[in-house]
Image (cartoon, rainbow, N blue to C red; front, side, top):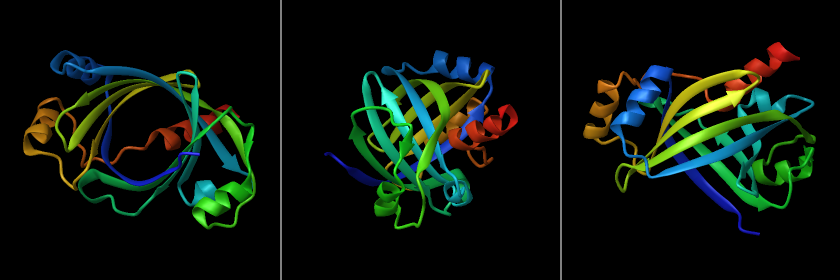
Length: 190
């Protein structure tokens, strides 16, 4: 089992379809990836209250259990998360509470599959410090657009920040992440 524990640092923002198209025209994206996030919730809603993301991500024919625990640092639009990932063999209907407890050290029951969100992701390595991910997301009849910049340091290079400002992207404005948008739409559907 190849488990990965890391700290993820990223800036993210919802954008309009027009901004999405403009950025596609401005950047020579290196890679396109289709991924599906399958989201889980526990009966006691401990995950939801603690803003912990438990999901299985499917890329091609591979599945990855991912658990993301957002830390409180949201300074200047920077989101920092502790992230756990391990490859799994199939998409489960439930993730055992015992498994989640071992990872998070949190008393919790089983988490059950609630639905999925599909993302068409374009990727560009801006620098050794920054990777741009341009996403088009599909869930519950909704299509939205988001840009993420994953970074290794705590700052975006000034040239990259200028590029985003020129394209109307302001990371200082807080926007909801995919998980939050998915569950907000889920509540209106069920």
